[in-house]
Length: 114
Image (cartoon, rainbow, N blue to C red):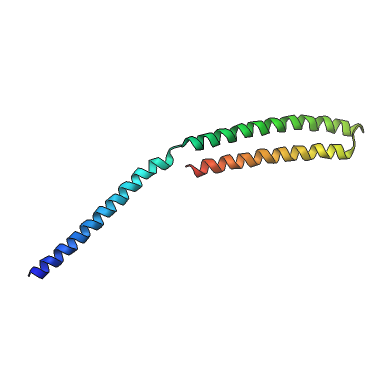
């Protein structure tokens, strides 16, 4: 009879330890979720830097777009060579690619920290 009770006590003790461990895991998960959602200063600085970079690149695109329009008029009038015109076209395309790359990085950062 004592063996039966001893076996039951061992089972109960093992169950009790498992229940406590499960409780700690669940509590840890609940405490970790808000911590992951918080924005750290590094994340804030990164987002700020990316937004500043994006603004700078967009201004560069506007400047190059204006230059491209002027170059197009000069090219149409035969005042600049095709090579010079194509350099302006390539510079504008490169600037637009930079804007798109920064936009992708911003979206990636936003999705990563959700």
